[in-house]
Length: 79
Image 1 (tube, rainbow, N blue to C red):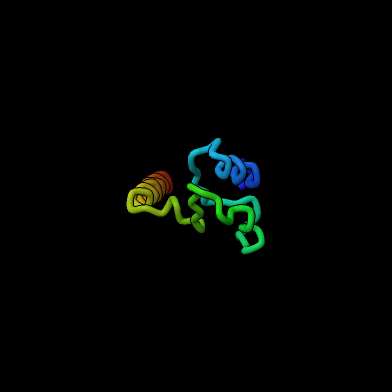
Image 2 (cartoon, rainbow, N blue to C red):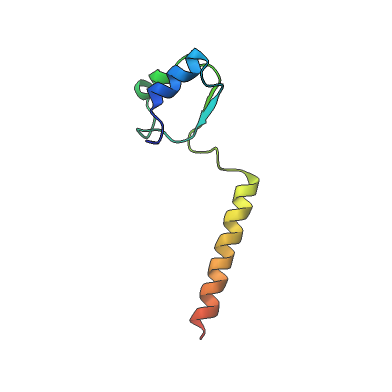
């Protein structure tokens, strides 16, 4: 959200200057029907509702990082 000008992205995709894009975050959240109108009919565009990063791999990675942080905290709190 806010890194890409959504209307410019839509125009680049529609004209073929850009081959494809996927967005998981939008300039205005949550994305409303009116806000999503700029993407209507745009080819080669995938829109996801903040779930693109939710994969088995990312869940394992987050679990590993969390477990390591808890273990580190417990080790240091006993000293």
